[in-house]
Image 1 (tube, rainbow, N blue to C red):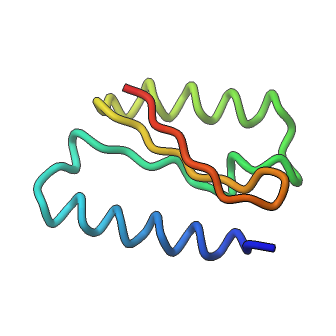
Image 2 (tube, rainbow, N blue to C red):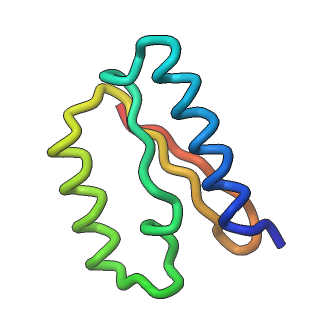
Length: 77
C-alpha cells in the first residue's frame, strides 16, 4: 500500500517547482496528512480545506490523498 510520506514528498517537490517557477501565488497544495480520513473527522477535514482555501486565496488548489489503497489527486479552480 502506498504510504502517505510518498505523497508528502511529491507535494514538497511540486511546491518547490511552483515556487521556483514564480507561480506560488497561483498554485496551492493541501497537506495530505490533514485531509486523510485516518485520525481526522470529516468536519475537521472540511474546516481545514475551507479555511485554507479562503485564507490562501490561490487560483488553483491541488490535493493528493490515499483512498482505498490508491493515490488520488484532485484540483479545484
